[in-house]
Amino acid sequence: MVSRVIPVDPFDLVIFGGTGDLARRKILPGLYRRFLAGQVPDSSRIIGAARGEMDDDGFRAFVAEAIGEFVSEGKRDGETLARFLGHVHYVSVDAKGDGGWKDLARLMRKDVVQAFYFSVAPSLFGDLAERLHRFRIATETARIVVEKPFGRDLDSARALNATLAEHFTEHQIYRIDHYLGKETVQNLMAVRFANILFEPLWNARHVDHVQITVAETVGVGGRGAYYDKSGAMRDMVQNHLMQLLCLIAMEAPYRFDPDAVRDEKLKVIRALKEIGPEDIVRGQYRGGPRAGGEPSYVEDAEDPASKTESYIALKVQIANWRWKGTPFYLRTGKKLRARASEIAVVFKEVPHSIFDDEEGWRENVLSIRLQPNEGMTLSVMIKEPGPGGMRLTEVPLDMSFAEALGEDGTDIPDAYERLIMDVIRGNQTLFMRGDEVEAAWAWTDPIIAAWEARGDKPKGYDPGSSGPEDALMLLHRDGRRWREIRE
Ligand code: BG6
Image (cartoon, rainbow, N blue to C red; front, side, top):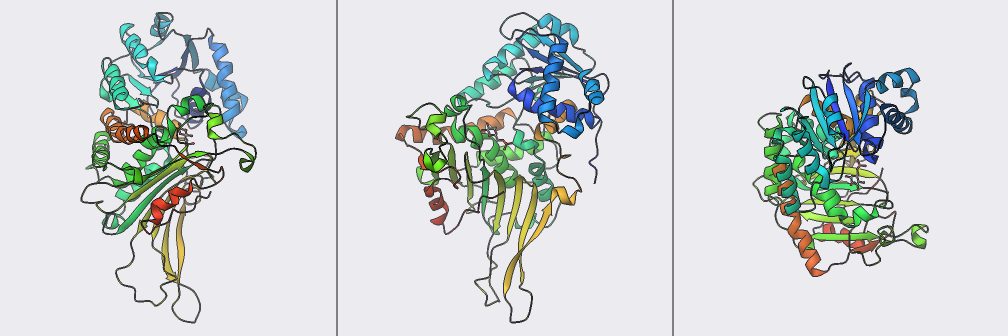
């Protein structure tokens, strides 16, 4: 099945931080792939903006190099690349001064979609927003895109929201959580709300528990300085895992409309119960010989006394009618056994078993794999084939998206590509609203404050493992087990 390409209106997209790492790795290669798909209309422009002095050709060389590095070879012939580079421009601007802004104003058109991607440190958001306004660059329908981290606690998130609100309305602000751009994450909504099968079972009466795992094999080497101020709770749970939890737990929105969806997600965040120390396990990866000589977390963070977690597991409860009594277990960490992200909805036992084969029985599990090998599997019980009585066995009803949709996986747009196109279309469904971000911090802050006040130290775990031993206990004591982390 070839995915349909929906045309978009011509646009001027300015990337502040156009020569930065995110632009190089994700934004520019993503735009090139959208160009290949026919989603960059003829007169559209992609304007890199950064402090460095450079002309259009210099930036085009930078863009070509990024594409050479991050787009597969078969997709970048010289002629196509040259056509794409025809859309690319550069302006040198000083985010904290006045330099370059008039040049940008001259370049921008008022009669096309305007989008400004703030791929810069949050401390510059206010400066950029103010100048876009003062130099009369942004129109009333212009969109701004902001990256995480969106604050590091409730106060800083509120301050950022207030700063942006001085110059832009909420409907112009697109806060990116790239997990919402992943194909399977959106499929979660399709599966839940376009099928009659699941919804009647989607509650505490039928769901025993939910496991959300985002496991990575990489460490924090290279970004230790940023990461050490953040940790897994701020870096991953407050945003990505919380968003996944919301999509699993939310009520059906009255329609697939940005505010209707976000209203429902917000209700979930507000219903999260406070959690105590017994429901949290924090870990830090070890180094040394067992890690094959690789550095430990504290070495990567360059702080031997660091108490920041590179792993966290939490037992979370939602205080509402639908979910009372169904725990959600969340875990995420660096340097784990495999790169594997999965949401597993584990259903309850049948009310009464008519079969003697108690041992063969397993609970039904709906496993939603985000990466790699995006897809869904529903495990069901069947009779083991052959004579000799009724023995039960578990088989998967498997739906690999690449297989089912006849795609080799390379044509599924990357999260960033999809989200940028949503910005151009003016669709905020997959972006976080200001109140959602604040509510997420309001839940996270006291948890972090409590472990800081206690001076808790994370538990050590070996690289290549499933995390600290104590994390197993989080489920064992409830008579449950984590699912295996595997690719
Ligand atoms: C980012 C985090 O938001 O997400 C990183 O800051 C993390 O620490 C990354 O590695 C994971 O994203 P993905 O798409 O590779 O799962």
